[in-house]
Image 1 (tube, rainbow, N blue to C red):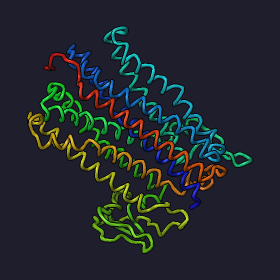
Image 2 (image 1 turned 180 degrees about the horizontal axis):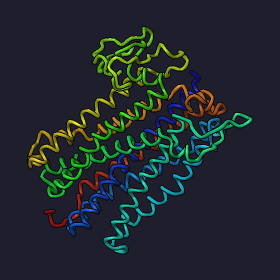
Image 3 (image 1 turned 90 degrees about the vertical axis):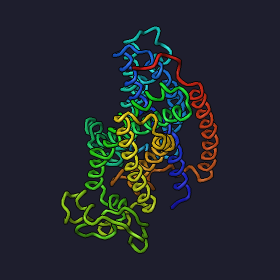
Image 4 (image 1 turned 45 degrees about the vertical axis):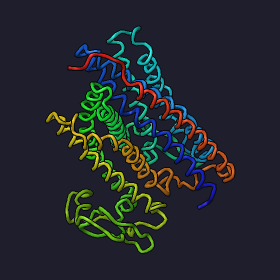
Length: 444
């Protein structure tokens, strides 16, 4: 691979991965803050307002860092991927422009009211601010996902006389079926992150003997929401996303599963190491027929392996794709188990004093970040070697006149600045955690 192309790819992968560390938490917290504000409005208990205010501060820090790291990422379409922007800018410019003009301003404007305007807008107005922040953050997520979904499955376009891609159906772009399921899967992944962050801090407070009334509220809200979210991430959203991959990106599905040879009653690999040269899985642990059942709803159905497709259309890095997919699925299964056990203990009234499970919730806090990152790696590595699937190769879309030296220089610069931003963000969040929520009567 061309060294400049490899650096451009890594540069964008680094910036978008770092950016999404903050975004996924805001996607989850937006819903949880709205739930807390609804509980406060319904019960009149100031405890829930204090809880919402506390998490709104955490939200604001993540939102600010998400904005700072997100703006340079969009500029990279021009600096690092100019040929892609020239060809497809008339399509993706619609969704990216709408994201900035509508959803971002909706979210940011009402976030200001949520943080600073409570005394001005009143109880109902403050509740509405939380609603608007939630809607704005999820609408922003949909428009970004719709952009990526078009790159995964291009629809509603025609080719111009000079090879440019012209949008001929705005509704096809915006309501791409790939976008719908990818959005739900992505958003629920963010909800899982938010729930584990809230549950982890609640467990921390209970284990440390601090802010225990708030710790119990954190756990009650996050575990109840998280149990539902972890289940929905797997089914139906994950299942339907996999069905779309099977229908439109056959080589991707085969590589995700380490399925090298076409055959009936195809097994699903639980463990194993893909050997691309020998076209096999080493040390496999498989479930016979399960892949056939998942893909075609029949145990004996034939599933196409990588041998069915031309070698040049295989994903560029099959081991990375395989491991990313299995990490995502494996962690998702663990999340269901943790949240399910926590919900059971919550229902039994024993969660707040059951230390092994509190420690599990506390230590699991980083894992949703790993799972969400692995999920996006599965989607983006799986699309390769296509930048726009079936339409533009990745090698045809990068800025050929930006040398590898320039790309390396800016990459190091981004790494340095983003490291400082990360330390600043962690410091601000830890300061809020140390201070804790404001004092208010306990919830009943």
